Length: 226
Image (cartoon, rainbow, N blue to C red; front, side, top):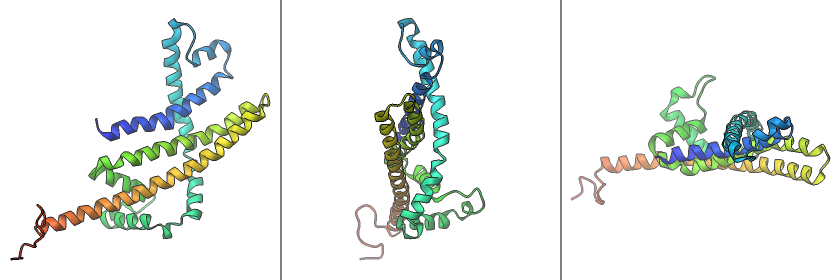
């Protein structure tokens, strides 16, 4: 079992299943009574397995819908990033973009061009998959909070009828803080991906130079040294 296999499960759990479970709970509040009792786990022991199966499957399906809607927030993030962290002043991005253009120039043209972030993550996955452990953890957090931004207005609408001001305010605050956290985690994800790809390339190239000059094995002398 590779780290990426486990972290893929963690990403699905945080980004899809947890928001989907919240969406299932919300849907159960408006479903007919004979249906809602099967949407949430509980009840008699004989129905518990069925209830959990329906709940988990429904959470997974609804979670993907929430995830799909949340992906639209990436455009909002791009607007925020361009204002807060312009690409021209982002040293990690500039270095990674130059490396991408140098190593894979054919992937940087046309409407289907591979973005620098996707390229950096592919480069890391190919050369050192273990280096993606922390990157994937940050991605899971980012996508979780992005989905929570989508759920926040739905919770506000739910708690507004009947009017429950404390829960409405709590849902609004959760939505705002989730968006702030989403932007923060997304920024860390991109910066770590860019920096890791550049560092991996530079250290790999330096190791190859030392190997060509015969500096490996603890020898500090060049081949032509006495």
